[in-house]
Image: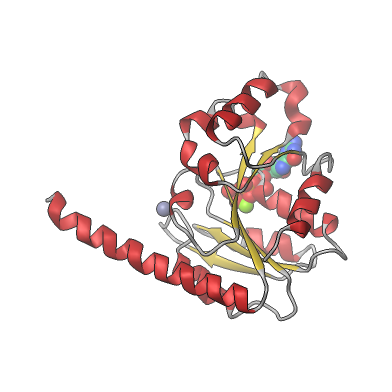
Length: 216
Ligand SMILES: Nc1nc2c(ncn2[C@@H]2O[C@H](COP(=O)(O)OP(=O)(O)OP(=O)(O)O)[C@@H](O)[C@H]2O)c(=O)[nH]1
Ligand SMILES: [Mg+2]
Ligand SMILES: [Zn+2]
């Protein structure tokens, strides 16, 4: 049985990679950069994009691509902040396929400098699928526990930047910040770590600076 499954899997991955490569070329032609935000359901990805609408205003013109199994709620939240947002509904799909992202690019407004993609809430699968992004950004919230980078290392290993979100909640939790930092560094010693709260705005300027400074 497994001999029949391997070529199918390979064909799917090859097709996905072709679409990601096409997206990378599309972005390069327009000197656009694209960041792929990945984290668990409820980690605070949309809240972060909402906060970045203010933090990046006048510095980096960005549009958003949202991925969710159902509803256009996240795109509506981002659009309410004056940001162009396209919703991809994946149904039972647990990650954004490269083809869907590539198709969405055509509907983005002109004159953008950056695209921020919020992937389907999932700590595992979206990390396995390249969508042609400039970098993946792992989003981990303090309510998830400090051991998650060790238990789900794939995303944290591949991330070009790591966000530790909801830091305003730290006084209310049993969460050891140093243990979490060590866990992150055990998996990825190079990626910048942004400890922030989308609610209070603490730590947000450092991430905004990093996004603005990245090359396309
Ligand atoms: N205290 C606090 N709560 C936050 C913060 N960021 C997000 N939240 C809350 O966390 C919950 C989930 O936030 P979302 O932004 O919807 O999370 P998400 O990662 O986009 O969720 P999915 O799109 O469903 O995967 C909401 O109730 C937010 O108000 C934060 O910085 N501090
Ligand atoms: Mg969301
Ligand atoms: Zn998936």
